[in-house]
Image 1: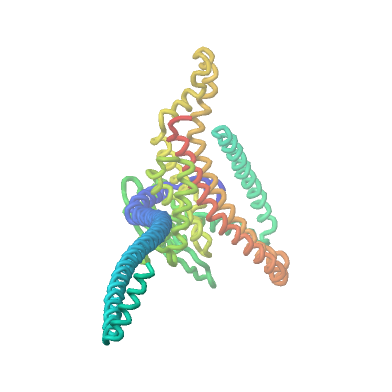
Image 2: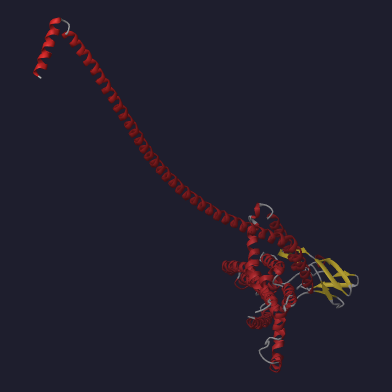
Length: 167
Length: 356
């Protein structure tokens, strides 16, 4: 066999290869490459989307955390302010109450003193009156007693006369 | 880059021509040898038979019985279409008569007509049958892969997990970087090219299989497709590079003498690129088959030269080498499919480029 036959293309194989290969390109394009590449593209797109969604979720979570921390900080500050206010109010109220109580006490004390003073005066006056009445009664009794008999009256007159004489 | 390719192409061409001449010489040499010592086993006819096309699919011959699959012979002679089975020849013992045309077949499978009419042979030969089988297998596999995307949520399973990386490889590492943004248009061609060459390469490695991708007719057709696609999609830039390669760097008075030399080179370059593709695939696959067959032939040569003991001595070494070559051929099957696709996309990329 002539080795040059090897490098001499045969018309039959050229013909069949051309037809078969052309048909193969067309058939595979429709039934294999298009569905496969579409599916691969779709899949890679869905993977990309999933990664993007995860990234988004991650960033929104981070934002949420940040916001939460911010709110927490703010509320802590609010609480501190409220506590401070409350303490101030408390102190103020206590101070006011103290002042008021003192005023009241002073007032009560002052009025009590006044009453006591008045009562004392009244009692002293009563006492004076009583003493005066008592003195009069005593004096009356003494007088009555001293003048109960004639002798005694005479003696008294005598003594009186005697005093007068002396004068 | 283009220059580099040209040098490569030309040197390849020279290399191949020397190869053909060399094999011619050795053949004559062996022919004269076999006449002198006819008892020595001559591997050349068997090797040539194995790497050539045939009208029937011969597996093996056991005790004078040929185990073959007969294939249709389709002949177009003198405006007559003659169709019959290759088994009608009875392995060259019979002539086939159709109308007034008498066909005979020689030991190399060459059909001739008794009255010397020229024949256009469109037979479904061993290579055509093997190619059809390969295409059928390829279609079934890829159809299955395409369907399997509908389930599993697109997670590759089974054969899909083997095919998908190859598809993505052709798309992302062959088409995209070489062609650029317009790669999508050429993807079906490139993918079909890759898988067509790959499956034919792989099927060709099976024992008894045909040497489809090692046939110059098939590689020629693929190269012509690449040639057509490349030049049809050629941009203005591409053509100006061929017909006005020096551009505005000098005046026409200086360019015209240069172009007398440059233009033929550029025009030859258009055709040399696909010719290199054609020869590369053909030579690689045929060479692989020849090496494996030659190594196996060593056993029979040892038998004829040294007797049965010699054959048993050579066989383990020979088988070990064949096994090694088979592994290399497995790599080459993928590699050549890749190179053909890569260079095709490179040529398309050079053709569609719009600016520097």
